[in-house]
Image (cartoon, rainbow, N blue to C red; front, side, top):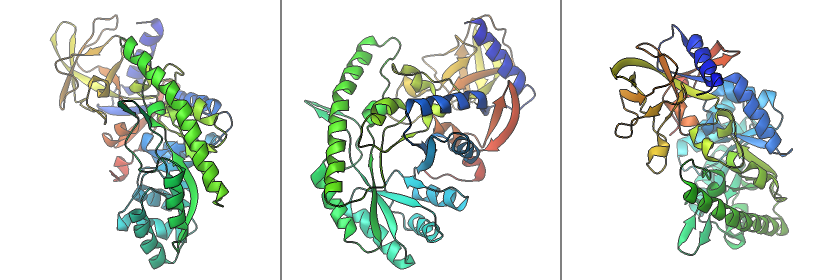
Length: 400
């Protein structure tokens, strides 16, 4: 543990003194540093802000308002997009298909009011739902075609199971189908290379696995760039005037931005820089978000039991999805207990004196899911709490 770590722990402990714990926080100074770093990595191309990684309207407004590189939002449900549009946000891309009639009608109402909301599709059945809503409301709904960017190697599917559209033929077929439907208009293309953007490749203590992932990423980049360019060229050759071609994420900004066919990228998690981002070789952002648990017992020397803490991230279950003790540096979960529903024991034998009532700071493995556990975020700046703001949950919203 360095003296900087000790000072940061003391700064955060002092800032939270007298407040009810557990509590989630965002360090605004670090969030702004991360936003600037993401903008620099994007090298001038617009970055669409991923709402699922932030899940707090006040912080979404801050980033869009202070950093010109961030333009527009990528939402994770149609209902969320309609709500944000009603709250004054514009240029919204729903990154996942929706077939919920109520949510689609809410989107159509906002489109009728002049808001720009684009709905993602990868199947004709989805077009049926969108066309029915567009016809009923008398609006034209823009759609975005989602092309699968996973790579196939002998005996290995490298990527996520996302869209059935993999190449120009399938994408063109759906684009033609959409263009024949009154009330629908093809406006964009989405291709998210999750296997590059979302997979750590420099995991401490796992050198062999990390080297393999980096090798697969290098192989996959060429495949992704080629296929994305082929799809864009095919669409434009047939007269589809795409307003945007979106790709990438925090973990792949440099490589995605370098593709001429891509007009914008998406990022959000890098603003908070959750624990999984500690395992990337190409970049490092500053941890800006976390949560504090109160130490409520000391069952043995060097063991501090905290109240709450079982905030486990989504994805394939494993130790990497558990929250990670952050401050004081050197603290660690117990491997046989992990993070518990009502208590979390942590091992620590460092220089900071801890006792009952003190906070212990942890970071969530991923970004926005933290906000599903807390109804508000304390906002820190200059080592002090300067404000607090509701999360989606605090505003009574739970979209998934």
